[in-house]
Length: 413
Image 1 (cartoon, rainbow, N blue to C red):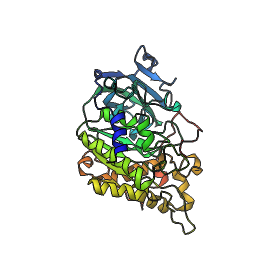
Image 2 (cartoon, rainbow, N blue to C red; image 1 turned 90 degrees about the vertical axis):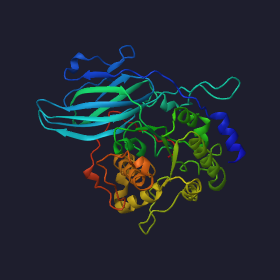
Image 3 (spheres, rainbow, N blue to C red; image 1 turned 45 degrees about the vertical axis):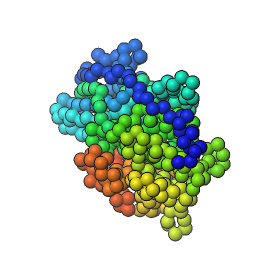
């Protein structure tokens, strides 16, 4: 490993674990919603963002909990009417696709939600480090970094009978990357990382630490890697996808040339994971939607995907080729329909909407199924795989909009 990368990581990475006491199990009866208060830091649980169950409108429910992984069990349905409920957690992570019940029928579902805060373990005396992750201004009010677990109940007719939340000790899949991976906090954008939890069973957590505009250099400088490594334990996984922003020479502070600095940073991230008994998996970046006149996608990533694959081969670790899968996906839709998988009505040719993000997450799950057998053992039983050359029809997937919406341009666009 190059000396510069080794020295930088030694200075920034903190190895001790946070030791917050786990919260006790909490149960909530939602059959009488008027009896439950709105969430406040003082009462620690309740309906959030000014919402309550009302007709068929979406609503939020939050519970104050320490950092950690939580098993959430929900009972969905209504004694008097049919229901159709989709569940997201934190910053719009997809937990359950729409669950439908008949009148008087109830469905119990369980999933795992990862909750985190910004705190870092204190560095040793006289050693460099930080006390917290350096958040961007837009992150500071997000569900991602607050001290509560937030559930969004949405769909054509959301009906929730009860919620149970309990701390749980399960393996964690950490996601490191940029805006094409992160939990996009508001409609209409979405990224594959926030769709990935739906493809796993309730015996593993997905902790998405990716953020818009990130590069490998900034992920270090903002102490995001330090945060991941402070939490990761032997038996966990880390999926690493960079390149979209690292290739931007007009960002001189974070530009990393593919065959030199970018390669070195990849090696360093992999080495730090292996040092802790964590299994690293590399991911090539999804392509941008740039069709040539022949109807084929033109490559915009230069040598970066090849370098990712080369490093994976050299380190004897899996590489999930999302670039190739994304090209197959876009070309299967064709130049006229491919914008229907992208943010901002297709005006954004880099970032996706919920449909596009869901398909790319399914491509990741399919690649895990083939190339990472230990992690594949945790995939959802109802996931049979996905061929990006034959993606699901756009109108076959329904993702109701969250109440949170923004017209803000995504960083790195």
